[in-house]
Every structure is written in structure tokens, then in C-alpha cells.
Length: 129
Length: 129
DNA sequence: TCCTTTATAAACCTCTTGGTTGAATAAGAG
DNA sequence: CTCTTATTCAACCAAGAGGTTTATAAAGGA
Image 1 (cartoon, rainbow over the protein chains, first blue to last red):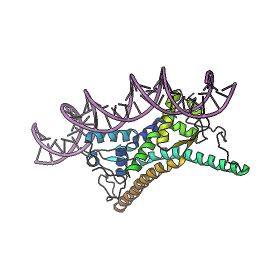
Image 2: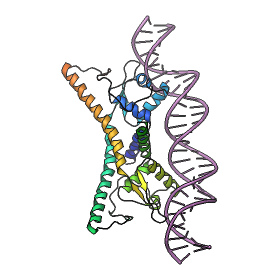
Image 3: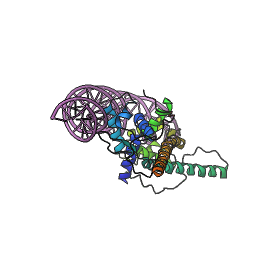
Image 4: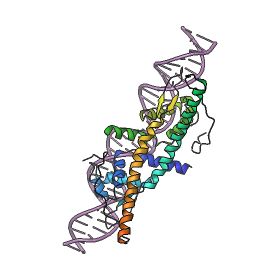
């Protein structure tokens, strides 16, 4: 659970950088070496190497070996982690919205909506005391 | 374009923090005040207030006013930005994978796959020189 | 073997982030 | 008015992130 949390943190964090998102975009089009990737940005190759390490730690890319080169490969499955998280709460919010609509509908009043309509759901992630 | 980029950066960045993700999770169950949210974590209320500002700047939440209270509301539409980005590259990677399979199939060889199969795609985001 | 290419490691710097505490603001409630 | 509640602002601090440069490692190619 804390593990999944760390993983999500790493993935979101990895994609919060424009260069790293761009690297992912490029890799979706095919594997590439560090040098190939690096030539597109103004930052040093070492910086790109660091970015790749971040992506790798997040599980978003993997690397093999081809002579001196280390081709980088996109691991698209990790996206699932994010989309699942996102979709879960999006759905929940939409569901709540639907219910709110139903309530307003039933009593035909505006109301500033300050209370909570739904009860507690089992929330696997939240844990702080 | 750079605007969308900033927005994506802010959204991913906002969700890269466990407390902020948890806040989003809670808000998906209903609006809440800063105080209500803050009581769940060990950090100070001021820290929570800062987290909310980050979420707000990312467009993930909005705030209204109810006397001294400032109820926080989840803006789930922003999720679309992310899912669209993610799905785009996931799909592209899968597509590439399919084509690779086809190629391997056609020539019945293993091959370590180092080259690029597809040509450049018009990539709206990538822009660095 | 020696050179060149490709990539990483290490040390360093600066800016950002997430946290703190203490003061200020906003808006009822008595 | 004055007090209390709810929230934010300001100043500060430690740790982390992203960048640099210099040096090192790994692995063909001449």
C-alpha cells in the first residue's frame, strides 16, 4: 500500500517535468539511445542521463545494451497505475455529482451544498491518523 | 502549447505528493473545509493550506466561501488533461508494438530490435531545439 | 594496444518544495 | 465592540531537484 503509494509518487513526479514527458513522447515512437534523445534538448547529456534515471526508477523506461549504447525503451504498462488512480476518483466525483443532482431534483431547491451526502467509503490509500 | 505544457506540469506535479493525492481522494467523496481536511494529517493547517494552493493552481480544486470557511471542491475535469496525454502515448506505444510484432512475424526472425521502425510523427508538444 | 564513442559518477551550485512558527485577516457570535 | 473560529501571509529553514563541469568506465574500431 505504501509501496503503491511510493510508486504513484514516483510516476507522477517523473512526468511532472517537461523534458521527461517529451522523452516519453519520443520513446512512444521507438526506442532511442541517450545520445539520440539528448540531441533534442539544450541541456547536457549528463542531465538527460539523470532524467532517464528518474524515469527508470519510476518504472517508465527500461534499458538494454547494444555495444557502448544503452537503448532506452518505454514501459507503457506503468501508465495503468496512474489511469487507474485517476479514473477511480474521477468516477467517484462524477457519481457524487449525479447523486447531488438527484437530490436537488427531488426537492427542487438550489441550496449551497456544504454538507456531505455520501457516507464513508473504504479508502485504501488514506491512512494518516 | 506551452500553456498546455505548464498546465500538465502543474497537474502532474500537484499529484506527485501523497498528501495532495489523499486530499483529492477525500474530495472525490464530497467538498470539505481546510480544517476538516487538515485534521487527518500530522502536518500543520498552514501546510495543508499550502497544499490546497498547489492543487488550486493546478486547477484541480476550486474554493467558494461559506462564512469564515472556504469549502474546497474537486474539479475532476482536469483529470482529462492527464488521461488524454497518457492515453495518447500509451496507444502510440501499443501501436508500435503491434507493428513490431507484424514485422517479426513477417520475417520469422528474433532480432534484438535496435533500430526505429516508424518515421517521425507530428508531435505537437516536443519543441526544444 | 591505444583511441574514440557512449554513457555514467561525483562534486558542486542554485532554486524550489514542503515544512515550521508567529502574526494578520475575515467573518460570524456574544 | 470584543472574542473566537477559520484561514492565509510572511519569514525562515532543511532537503531535494535539476543543472553544470570534470573525471571515470565500458566497449568497439584502427
